[in-house]
Image (cartoon, rainbow, N blue to C red):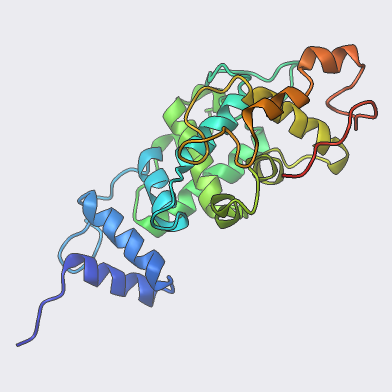
Length: 253
């Protein structure tokens, strides 16, 4: 007697046929089944769900975090948002000094367009429809809600060049992950920017990067005292746009 395949099994077969590694195909299929997004036969329902940050975060956690590892990409996003928004978590924030950065993650116009493209791509791959705001050219980043900006951010993390496995394993620090893939500025400014990132983490009171322990992996909470405050930087005449010469380099961790 021929056993009829389940919806999940069918979806796994479809994804493997499309080139997904089996482990990733299983994670996608299970996540979709849990949210009621599969029909018999493993196909996505005709009326596609609208792409949203929560589902995309579930997806990146299911496909980038090994089983048994206490790690949540929500915490990565919260920590980056805390730094970029200077602790305000304000989606309407405009960059201090009149710069082009906007919103929770201080997204600049060119990056905004790249992120929208990545939302479209991830939506296509996972079987979601694209939210209206993605195609509304009249909207700027600071016109968007927190959830909409989170969607841009997580799609960027999924579809961009981010080495997510290295972050999850601890091979790459959060500071380097942020500097490499979100800030992505000039190398001469990197040390000062990382100092500023670490300084901002001293006021972060959300969940840590990994379950329990310190706010940043491998860094004791007392270690943050090593980094100068913004006031100390200003007093020392150190600009965040120039490579500091009066402060010791940030140690690697």
